[in-house]
Image (tube, rainbow, N blue to C red; front, side):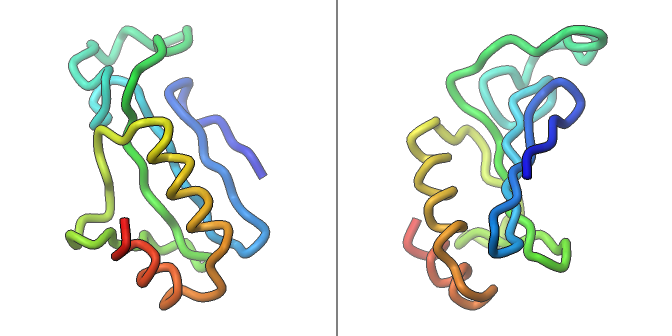
Length: 103
């Protein structure tokens, strides 16, 4: 499942129920962090080289990354793909936490 979020990113839910949020709008920890919030009201946010990601478990809770934070900032497209592959392959929250420790 795909969802657009506020004209500044998207959520993608995998068959296993885990979901990734990829955001690159004003205030998100990525290439457009310093954009004024008004920059994307009524229009699309410009592209960016990096984005902010978060991962949600099937029950809707945020999954912490290896540093304990629930948001990972300034992530490149290749890194987003690597996280997506890890999320799609996990079989449980414990499995995902272990996979995230390897990133």
